[in-house]
Image (cartoon, rainbow, N blue to C red; front, side, top):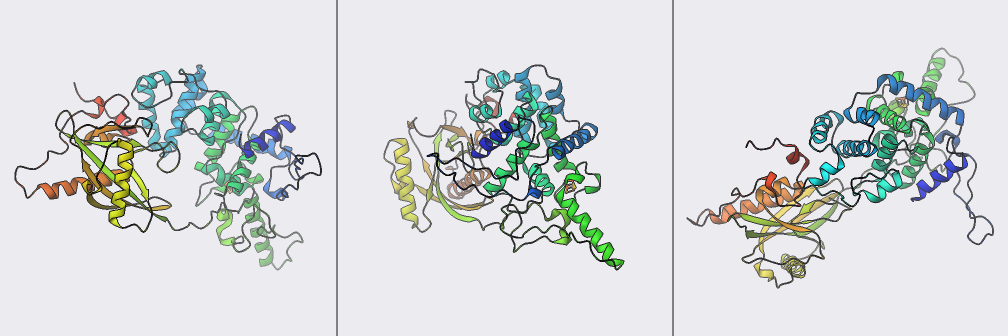
Length: 488
Ligand code: SF4
């Protein structure tokens, strides 16, 4: 259990699972030896917390009443509300959450409906060639903790969403929309992407979530962020929780002061609360105080982005002739966490920044050799060129080589999963855009080399097996899966 979850759980236990933890009082940790308690960090000021149970109740009621009136009609919501089979309910919400992480609601609806038509249950999906867990025997775990532990690729947010929406577990969720709403509700101006602030937001979400309608409450909070408390021009006038919103209150007070000033009246004694003073861990930094011209959009804030880090990676397009004479390429799967988690790529090796090309070639040859269990001569690697790709935080340069294999190779099964694919299968697999660029550069180079020599042109992309007839275990892209099947 993460520290934040442990804190939230402890808070819920203390409050009988229904009210806010005693925020505003300092929480002391017992010393391991039973001596003087260790100093706990000072709690943030009350305006950043939901410490009044009456306010929490009112906020829940207002938000849920608004949700019942205004919620969007979405297919996964209908299924979560009406489906009697708990496994199918959980599966339906899981599918929707995974899709919603990729694109917008409007785009997801069609994909979702087609997906659920094609694979209405976890069992149906397990029978397809997708890489899903079969160890669960088609049964969805029922709690956020188990969902996160047992389902691959399911993080804290998705686990909380499935557990609350499908199984009624009173657990909060924190996604981008919730971050924005909570930061505005409680004037949180510290970097909203920092782990300490995210932990606080999880605590808040767990305190706020309605105990009798957790799934609806979480969806309502996210819906509010998606439709009313939007990033640039929030519709505060229509907001069902504006009376609980510190940011809105601050704007209202400022407007009131301005009009009093206009009529020559002295401002009231209690001035606008001033965020950014002192060392409060949730206030904006003193160097970036509240900006009246921004109003509620002062929140949330993110630390200035660091320039992308430069990285070099050697990658090798390993090619062989497939059984139909068409070229096949070896791809390997990336680890299940970190950058491009679980995606497939050509065998690659991160490089130090300042290596000479020859050294890069040697290092890649050693890497391939260890992997294939047979000698790979560095000079046998043909340099193709460099391909750059910008990820949000990394400026990646792929140093591309190619190697044509005459015979078959036995790959070490202890290493990452790997497989041979045709060009068509490569494009239908879960590969990154960067790898598509690498294959394009390789193809360009091959065409350049083969074009002047008559008769030596390699037949690239020759039709071998279609995406639908991929080898067992082939992971296809979402789009490829949902393409209409070829006419018989
Ligand atoms: Fe967001 Fe405005 Fe509602 Fe506050 S009042 S939660 S800023 S929409």
